[in-house]
Amino acid sequence: MRRFVDRLVADTLKQWQQPAISMSLLWNNDTYSACSGVRRKDQDATINEQTHFALASCSKAFIVNAILILQSKGKLDLDDLVKDYIHGLTFSNEVVASRATIRDLMCNRLGLISSEGRHRQVAFSRKDLITRMAFQPFQHEFKGSYAYCTDGFTLLGEIVTRVLDAELGECLEQLLFTPLGMNHTNVSHVQAKSDGNFASPHLWLDGSLAPIDWNYEDHVAAPAGGVNSNAEDMQKWLYFILSGQSMSGKVVLPEEFLALSSVPHMKDEGQFAEHELSQAMGIYAHLVQEEAYALGWYTHIYKGSRVYYHTGSIDGFRSLVGYVKDCNFAVSIMVNGDNPFLPRMLFQTLVDKVKGVNVANWSSLFAKHQTDMGNNKVLQPFPKSELDIHELDLLRPFYGNYCDSTGFGMATIRQHDLSVIMTVGALQFYLHPIGELCFEAYKIWPYCVGPQFSANGMININGELVGFTTTQQAIFTRLIEPQNTWKTTNNLVSK
Image 1 (cartoon, one colour):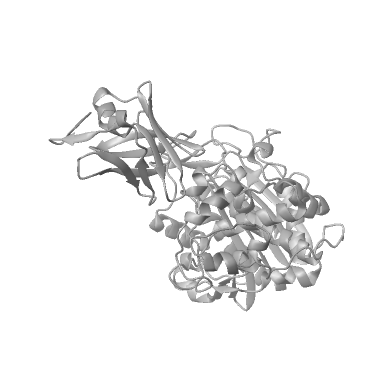
Image 2: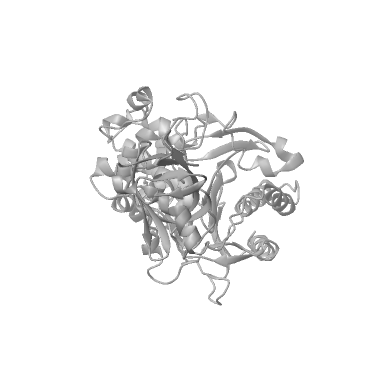
């Protein structure tokens, strides 16, 4: 198995132009790590078992198991109402706010549209985001369908912190990291980078992967995607998810509670189905049956075995953690490049290996699917932040203060030197005109993957610019400031 894995990793690095792969495996009680590649493509430093990567949404299983540990200790129950822990919780659908349970959050049946790219971007904290959830629309009836919603796991993290009256990192250390000996796992990308042994994320630029700065909204979204770890610690996590124990044999979560996370709750079907693995399998997709979401895990049946896994993605990192219990097999895969189907391909290849079958060349199939999907993130140059006089004139009508009634809150648009900057909550954006009374907003961030949103001005019957709408469905209305009243005249903007 070790020679097979080493060869697989070496081939994958080359074929997928991948900077590095950090993999931990457990099979028949034998643990093994395969770590190969470089931290950054423009440097020579290689990764090792202690190199930190982001787990992204593979963090969700950590929050689920933290909740299960609290249940095993009698601190809560999966069918408790969320509102009993987060007092004052409000959704746009009050029925959901009054009836949603902890279990509903864990299995993606809440129905709420996730806040990524929307309110999560501008929130100052998890509590602030939870307040803004009152403005998020629903995409399906409560419990009526499966639809992935990271905000449910953010709420779970808030429940954990309120039960234990501690910060999230302290809670996870108390419940999981310390008992399992995962001494280098955390929920802060700043902490993960502190000793210098960390992998830099990479996005695509001109046909190859280029390093970017590691940034994540830990202060808001850590419960849903903020856990960072290394291959050494992930061996201990794999042992736990198969047994509920630490590698020294200490029971951290009794088996009857651990088993709850593996129960399929929502079929992965309908309008919002994801088919995380089968979508890339082409003519072999029929081999994946009974796709569903359990509690923090995707699950399906493959070749007679129940398979569990979760994928993860933040800018420049991809991950997958999965297991097949009846094969006594588990694997963690962390990569520092935006190849979304690479971890899935590795997982499927390894599942075939432990099952003793040879179904297909998964590398070719998954790579083709990734190319066909075209969903890699591509770095783009910022539009020039310093605008010329004509561009400034096009944006000048927007200068002023605004208020939004859909959860984004206050916004200001001001000229700073030769740039026009919009401030919304915790974020700032460079604005760039794309026509009369229209602009694109680029997040002021160490790297650029294109405009965050575009906006169109709203004109009243008197020809006055009274606000603007955005592609994020926000509606910003100008606060009354007589000196900033603008009118349109003969297709020209005048004060």
